[in-house]
Length: 445
Ligand code: UGA
Image (cartoon, rainbow, N blue to C red; front, side, top):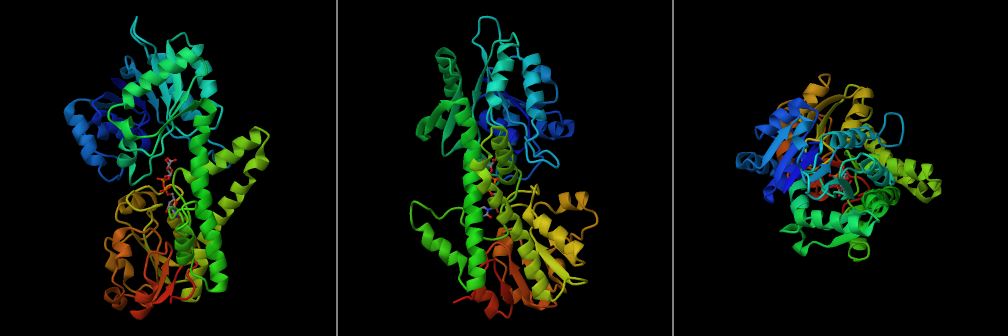
């Protein structure tokens, strides 16, 4: 099939390359010419495991192209909308201007051949419920033969390719009109059916359900994380160990073990802004009370960052002039994404409190140097640890999780380690002579 993907960020670029991998002819469109120039020659503009290979294979096959020229999307049979919906500055709601612009572009440039079936616009961006209906009306009154389906995406950064090619489920939000719905479904089936859909559960619903599935899933995940972080607060004042608690409750299938990792909380370009946009939308719909619990989820999450700063302050006896080695700055490992990163926020707070920082990150160091030339980002882990009064593990990159406490002890000025992700073995670090501070881990047994 001929496919266009509008928006080539993490979501769109991975989707475009994955669709080319399935054998489709794909054009990725983005307004950012520098990004397009890189993608077009097979160079990934961000860090995502496996993406470089997938991208290069797609570009070399001739089935994957990128452009900033909207005229190129003209004859696509499906237009995937994969642009960002960031939080509006100073407000809870999502900025929908990129989605609106993408729809305008499609209406202006899409031109299904005479006699061919209508082209399908498939929304992938995370949007406030009600958006799809409004877009469908715009398409209907455009005079072009364009149909809409809502087809949310659930990929995680760090696992983006696996999640795109082997998703847990596929969701189609289809038009209410039966004939349109069947046509939209058949176009999506043709796109995904072989080989994706074979073992993948397919949930067919209407537009609002499909839009809600996405934000409901992210809200549930955020709630799980804040729940376990609330338990960490209880563990901290009682001497309990939240990692054991999570293990024990997670054995119950109804609860499950995943997303119960307590620590400095969730960040990234999705969970924080999605729960806020969801609350804002519920307010607009007059049902804000249905989601007030998400306000608490957000509050608990942000409190973790202050708690980590407080732990560091306690550990070193006042932050002014103390050297803190910050290990990891991205919002999670296997990405260079620092959007709403708890680690970056904590580093900023430590710096504001007068600490001297040395920040290391396996993927984001160069990006951080560009963005924050005021911060000290040494080349090596050893340089960062040298003379530190505390070491803070804020992103659980494998090289930090696997650090040998005995080997690095001689480098530091004071043996304080703050395990912001509860990924180190307290016993091992204490035995090696460190003062270990976890997030709700009580006294090691
Ligand atoms: C999230 C969802 O997991 C995806 O399903 C969704 O498609 C995506 O948002 C999106 O809306 O596009 P992602 O932002 O890549 O994916 O990251 P997650 O793996 O969900 O992690 C989010 C944050 O939660 C990270 O900062 C992570 O460190 C933190 N986290 C995760 C915890 O603090 N504890 C946990 O137990 C799990």
